[in-house]
Image (cartoon, rainbow, N blue to C red; front, side, top):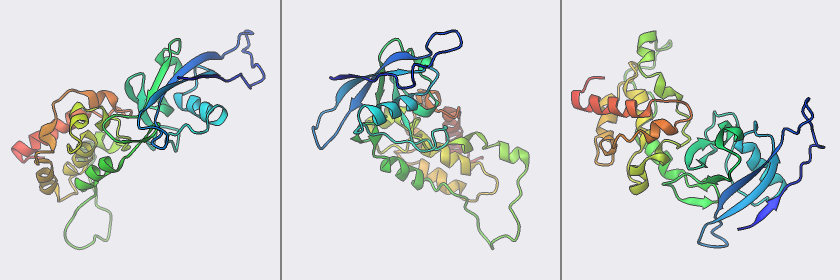
Length: 256
C-alpha cells in the first residue's frame, strides 16, 4: 500500500468567511493490473478537494495529477450514460452522482469495481455477459403487418404502465448488486428483466409471449430471491423488484 499527497493547486482559494472549502480526503482504491500481478491490491491516495465535488472529480484528480495508470470508465459525467458504476464504500453507485460530503470523507473512502463481472483493470469490468443478457430478452419493439404510414399512437394510461422501466441506463448497478448473479453468472439479472418488462407491457408490442418464455428459463426470472438489493442500487430510482414480480405474475396469469 502506498500513500501519495496532492498539494492544492487552486491558489489557496478561500471562502467568503476566510476558511478554505477544501478538505483532505483519503481514497482507498482497489487496483488490479493483470500485466503486473494476478492479485489485486488496495492503494491509498490523499487529495485536497471540495467535499461538494463528486467521487468522479476525485478520480479525475488522482488520474490526472497523481497516477495516470488509474483506469475507470466514464462518459457523460451527469448520470445518464451509466458507464461509471462502481462500489463506493461497499455500495453500488454512479461516481458522477455521489458527492464526497455524503459518504463520510473523515474516513478512507473505498472504491472498487462492481461485483459479479470479470475485472479487466482497476475499476473496469467486462460488460459483455451483462449486455448479452440484455440482447437475449429482445429489447426492441416487435410488430407484425405492414410498416405503418403514421406513428403508433398510445394512450397516456398505456404509456404509464411501463414508464418506470424506461428509465434504465444499463449501468449494471442493479445486476452486479444481486447475490444470485454473483454466484451464477448465467442468471439473466435484474437489468435484463427490467428491459424485458419495458416491452412486455408496451401495448404496441406483439412479442410479449416470446419474451416471457425466454424469462421462464431456469436462468430466468424465477432465480430472483427478492432481496431488494437491485432496487436499492438503482441510481435512477426504478422499482426493480416490483418490475420483476410483475413479470413473474404475467408468467403465471398470462395477463399483461
